[in-house]
Length: 201
Ligand SMILES: [Zn+2]
Image (cartoon, protein in one colour):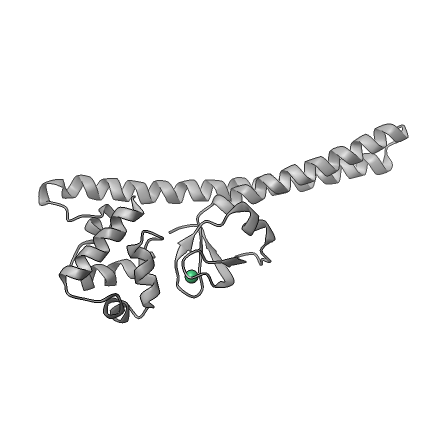
């Protein structure tokens, strides 16, 4: 799905209805910044806002996701394409999330095993140091891989403007986090807050 095309389509349709961003935002009980952000192609409306938005603009969800008014002849094909794309995206995200957890668990087991070997096995000191180094490298690599997979799974949701975004790896690693939230700066409204990790759009 083309965010820029969808954004331009939202702007065009809103102007045809002689609505300002503010008026459209008020109809949806959201900030006009959020509308502006969609129109600039910086994020898609979240699912719960799609129907009210389409009602306000008098378009179908299918038109919205395609970024243009769809003729009756093309409707079924476009609907299927959009549906398949959403399903594919959700499946990919779930796969990454599971891989990330598996990767984390394997890392913990491997590191524990190596630490046990280094601590209790009667081996020369040089070998002991090598095993400890190996445990360290395994921990760093495994946690790194788990973090990359987790950061790229789905999106983070800004608590202020509700926009969805994927953080850069640097930002992701720095951010204080709980199991489902992470402190990040929203690229749309530039505010920093605890952003919820959403796997399914
Ligand atoms: Zn925001």
